[in-house]
Length: 493
Image (cartoon, rainbow, N blue to C red; front, side):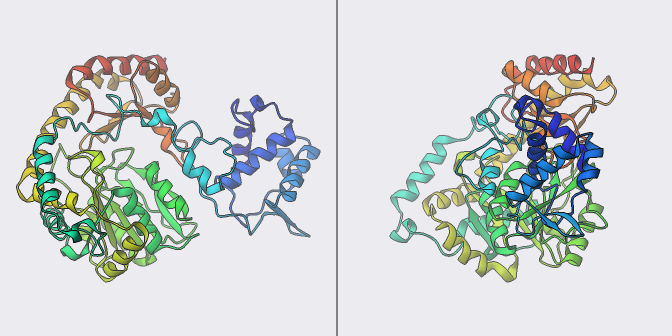
């Protein structure tokens, strides 16, 4: 309810809407209502309760409410219609819902930036990007065969023809696109031709390209809730309207009815980020059927699909797609190293030329000698060897971490999700636990975990800790996990 949100905002000790801001009540209500509009809880054209109803629900004087509404009207946020009521202005700039402050959606005043720019700039502070033993989303690339890689690069630089130093209009180096197509056909059951593969700088660029080509500003994109912050930024940059869709144990759970028909549906079905849920086959088929009915495009970010430790891999969405509605996104960063900055996008057959042209016009892709070295790296079997090696390494670290966290699983409401695949797991906690406070306490001890609630867009029913093990050295896992166990136990009592 709107009143609940406004009361919560006005009671927060941090920020201008809270009592800690030192503002009078009418200004605190103004700030809370403005945030509701900027966060997307109130959309253009929505009708507000009357000033009398708001005053009663918020236990404020009517004069206080009227003063806040008048200020918002003067600034163009609200419009009054005689005999009808007060509405959010139809010309309100397109806004998107963002996560709660203090995590993936922390907000501050940044003069000079647009509303969209503030969302892009404010999701993560510097500490969120630090790489520490349990930071989720990071891999250990210390074992990467640097000497071999250097030799391959040197060879292609020495023999580079002039055209290899230019931009590419073909979507990438041909042998690399063929190698990627062969890999995806075998490992992920994707039905594709090499011509459908575009080499990008990674998942972020692939997401942006899909958003720009397949949707217009203001179109709706279904996004998982909780969500991957990078997808939020990519879609925000393209002016899309986010509609959060809750995730359960089987992945994204499409509603029978929705506020708006989606133009795009973004999912991480192999290992949902951040909960770790693996989308069931039944749910995958249902999602594809719903996308067909809505005439929507599905963006499949096959996150962490390379690392499955329990059971056989589930076929990709693209492998089940009979209608050509799925854009498949992948990256080499986890198996090789992040700084490589090479990923791939499998475009729908009928749109390949459009994707190639847009990729060239927007991004001026190049790095052909680097792509040639990677193609040879794959063709010589080094990529497959690296994948086998990293799977074994991460499987061992995962087992260590699960064993070290086992003492917590006796507590009511504590369980682990997402441990069957990927490079992180999610330690789920009862709603009575402040997961942000636990994460902050552990950060003070040099342990970087992430609070699950920080990734939520609209949900308020999730608490937990994201714990990565990709970068954790075996000797660090047990002592660091003991600190996590201790911190969680303190929070439980």
